[in-house]
Image (cartoon, rainbow, N blue to C red; front, side):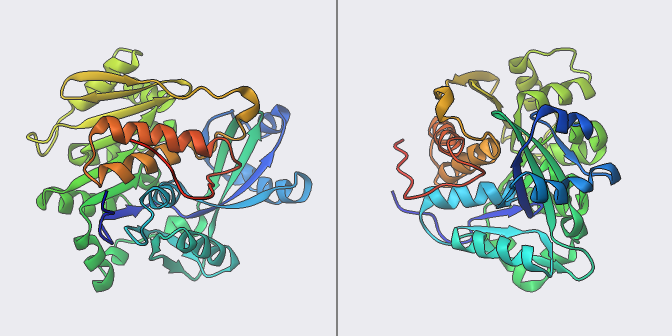
Length: 344
């Protein structure tokens, strides 16, 4: 199959350097954190980053949800610069590590640089097979819409046919999201988002629902979907019903029905499309092969996007997402090695 052209996929998100460490449940409790949750750091969480480096033998891994997904998509596509990434970083050592890593993985990184704030970091606290994320956005929070209006970046936006933005980015710059969403709609292209974390549906409801009519494909996991349903008063906890209800929310382009994809851990992936539900079983790994679920959702999206921009059927896209997530959870962080050998 021919590889897609350069600059076909544009992702916008928060570039973060993951600082990953195994801790016990008491450590999470000390900071009022839960397993398998994702939060933004406030003042009380700030000691975590130094602590886990000094006391818990932490690893540094290039991260940030969208950047991870694009790295995985590039791994599957095996052709440089199909994916472009925009996000804001500081002018420091961490941003150099991030850029080197992303470029080594063939992503066309075009960061905005902030001179005042350091590059964002994310504490990845691993308890057994669970992970809890605590993001200190720092420079990632400083992204401005001017970056996508610079002529060289505007050109990259115009070259893209597919746009992927995380729900996390709603905390940073909703103006950019709406500009890209409206451009995608006007050009009849594909706009894709992710619910990203339960707190997005709770505390960023208005910008999320402003973007919703433009969203052609929406990803989420079970807790994110349940929280969204609760906040929107859907009156159900049934994930299939929730997926169908999200599909039927108002849409700008009614001729292009919304697709909703929910991952549910070791239970089947739920696809809602055209008023129908399809389920896809995931690969259940033996306990000793499961290393780290951090990045599994990002990897799933990356595998899906790699096939979707090749115009493959949805079932192939989802099977590729399951395959990439299965590879990633057998390693520490959102990492991989060798050539991807997914068979459709």
